[in-house]
Image (cartoon, rainbow, N blue to C red; front, top):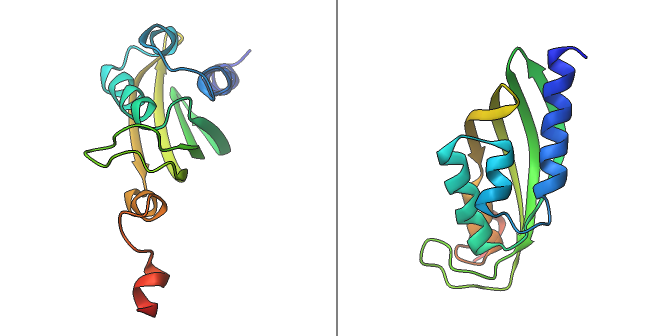
Length: 132
């Protein structure tokens, strides 16, 4: 199997295994040696336990895999000082993974934090802000 296909299937397996599951350090370390990624996953797992991940588009190039997707979950834990709201998160994101020797060794992530704050009711949505 060529490397691009192998990396693509690795990321699909990774998403399938961690989506909707308790994201323990042991589970994360099965797929990644990137400490910052493990910290990020743990942070979001604390605020949105067993959050789910959905791949909407994926591209591979060399050792890189780029995923445009969504994370969904219920806000049940504190998030940067915001107490649990019980509200649903449906957060679009884009992440780039570097894969070496069958593990994610590096990542770069962008997600729309404003959308998340609007969904949690911490700030009004752009449409609400203009109607008041």
